[in-house]
Image (cartoon, rainbow, N blue to C red):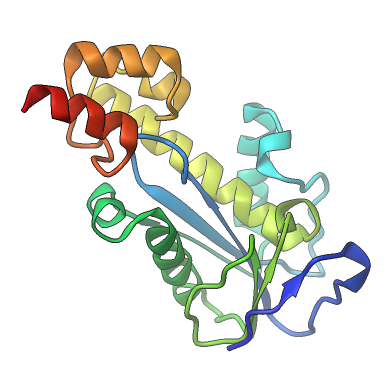
Length: 205
């Protein structure tokens, strides 16, 4: 497996064959899983408007999500749980979610392009690309699948664990989220290894 870093856009040469773009959503939040998407685009079915999911409105992400699922040669979404994040740390959990997403692709990937500077252990060659979600269409598509899937899950968790505002801030450490944690305590979907959650747990002990 290769783990080369394409640092400059003019140095980026995309490989041929079934190339999967891979990205994640949810490394920073205090609650919920980390989710990874993997997408192999179909050159015969172009998708307009692909870009880093953070640069898109929620409505546009939802529309592109459906189009990606319809037109991609293969796509997959996978996650690592809160328990796995707390047990192995967020980096390793993120790489695990990416590995699961790539492994689930049918047809399988012949090469993988990973957003960021680290590659998970895969059964195909892989390359890490800084800011890949704004440079490679397949990674942009993967970022959209991961973001939409995670946002939907956080909306569901908001119903299960009301009061924290998970549907609004998606688990990120906003002022309202921290205040809710201090008032309601730590829920089963909060990451106990993260400092703000650890501090609140320490006060209870």
